[in-house]
Length: 189
Ligand code: SF4
Image 1 (tube, protein in one colour):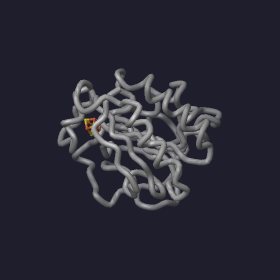
Image 2 (spheres, rainbow, N blue to C red):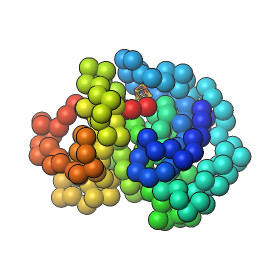
Image 3 (cartoon, helix red, strand yellow):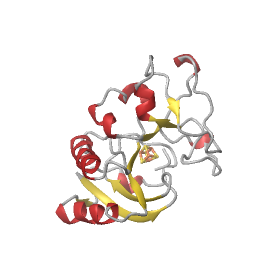
């Protein structure tokens, strides 16, 4: 896996103060993506032991709520296995810290990925510039969803996600009741 940045004390990519890993590699090619430099999976820096330690040094701090995986797309094929392994290690070492994941993929296509058992909150879907709204909470366009992963996996039908919050407020709103009603998905990345 390669990455572009590790940001600290981040307040814009999930609840609380977070460490954010910005990975390299994305196939979604969203119009007006703010980070096209991250699309190349061979770009950026090798995610080595120093980078791993940088993240763990942040997670060691009591005021850090958790880690957010962003990019690029952490679910790009070049990243998936390394992201999953890093998530597992973090959940073992820091069981009380939360893991957020941003991806251009949609919940309906990825909910069965083994790594989902480590994810607390998923922000799914491509960035649709036509639906862009700077006031949205934790996402860049209205089609995207902020999903409580563990609660969604426990649903009788996991395809109907439980939302973590509303579009503009921390109070969740009802999820769509049928797939037909589900918004066409996609990232703030
Ligand atoms: S907005 Fe996100 S998913 Fe879309 S191209 Fe950019 S990095 Fe990829």
